[in-house]
Length: 143
Image (cartoon, rainbow, N blue to C red):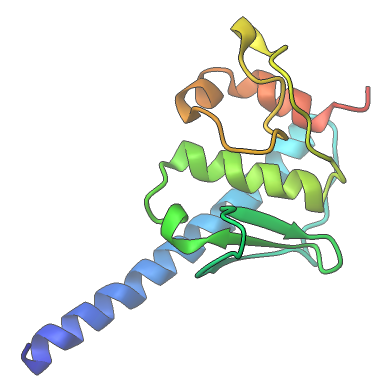
């Protein structure tokens, strides 16, 4: 590989990293707005979210409750649709910011999952179709 091709690959990789971080920042701001629309004030100033290269147990995201930091699996994130990225980050913020635990079951619309707080990401088209329901459940679960 010549030096110009290597430079182009390096610049492309750096640009992708910025795009991924920009997407995370965009989703954090959107989470705050969505929370406010549901009457929940959230303070994200001490919350961080970053991409990591691996987890030891096969997960694609996690919340560190001590630091209120979210870690997302890079190889999953870069391939995920915008809807799946949102679902995963909102799920992890549900742990970190809203102190939610996992909630299983299929009492959601049309027998779909009850909550995005289930243990795994579910069909992202379903999430987007019923997004209003899932956000209402996420932010108003204590009512």
